[in-house]
Image (tube, rainbow, N blue to C red):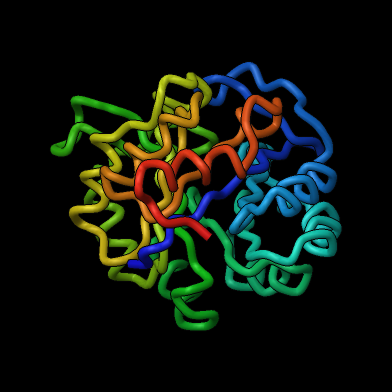
Length: 253
């Protein structure tokens, strides 16, 4: 695990525009992904995550043109997820500028996809994207969802994360559907449980609403913290978050 905490803005994209909702519902438009990516790069973002939130629901591929134009504007690692169903999809995304790919629904449908991606491109290029809800149906109390949080699986979130790491996932993007868009803070219990089992970096996602929310997520075990709407709305900047983390004794770039 790296000692320097990364701050990552997330661009949730639908139909070529950045959108945001609460608990993945009632999506509203927040702006142009390329313009926002440029803004965050200039603010000092360590990485960018680009998620095509309707690609799986609409059963189509990620918007490659938007990825290409984004990659041309920023010179930090770019993770792209949404609609990734095959090893060829990963190759195509890398050809338009993606450094890493996030995989969720397709890996749940066919876990061997994780092995195939890791074997061809390396674990460092593979991010397991976990959309997690609290549920009494699983041993850990957390269940994996798909299709932007709309469909619950029968997978225990912790068991699935452990299996994915064994299959070659090089990073866990852990998004709390319950906290997503609420601005009430990260799900610290979920972050802590993922940290306990994970041998790879953990990215905490879902719930950021104040600069004071980020340090507790790092203390709970996150190697990186990710947020969306608070950056898109201008409520805070990447610099504000890094300043707050440093004031709490947490090292940033």
